[in-house]
Image (cartoon, rainbow, N blue to C red; front, side):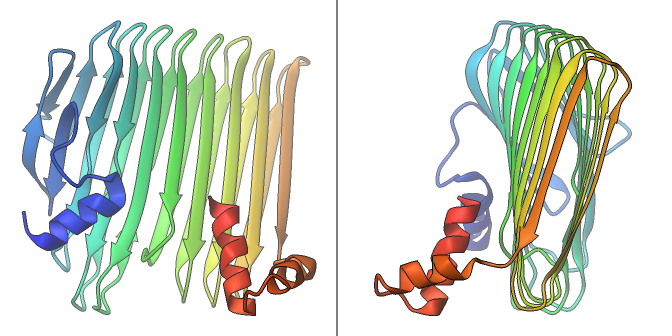
Length: 305
């Protein structure tokens, strides 16, 4: 791999050397490196671009890396990845996409990921998106994540985008059965004329199913963001949706909550807060010796930490 490849992998997946466990590295629309283990198998799909990842039942604390990097300007890469998680398995999956674009044509990656968790399985899913390059061509990322949780299973998802992505539409869907839990934490920062849209669509179908969705974002300069959440409580269940955003300069953020209780025992909560950095916070840090710019950066970094 070239140096730019290594730098992208470091940014999106903390990969500075060969990763632990199973992995599949995709570059410019093609798989370039792969490793499987006794408990994790990775199979190339037939008829469509993508892979199937199979995790055996009772697998404990294994790591799976599936990063994507794009260094070719003008490329549109679409990939379909399915994760099949066996009963009682417990794994960490690290994904993400990095785009390096030094030219005038747009580069784009659309990753469609589906998670099928069997009974009592557990997954931590980490996804980071990053863009760089001196070209005028846009860096576009449109991830779709679909989660299907069977009884007693849980999925924790961390999604991060803090630099270099010109346009993104992020869609996350969940279908939850009995005694399941779906936790999503996203962090987004936009600059310039960048646009970021997030949509959550979660159905709480099983008794005692629950979800906690948290979005923290910062919109600076002339960038725009939209946050849409749709949660449906179809039985005795619990949901908490939280959207917190900071706006600077001419940044704009729109939050559109929708919670629907279709059962008397559905307990659904939505909270949203959008505003600028509080003046007293700036003053407090500036009295400690920071400039106004340094104080703003410290507050934003703490907010997105």
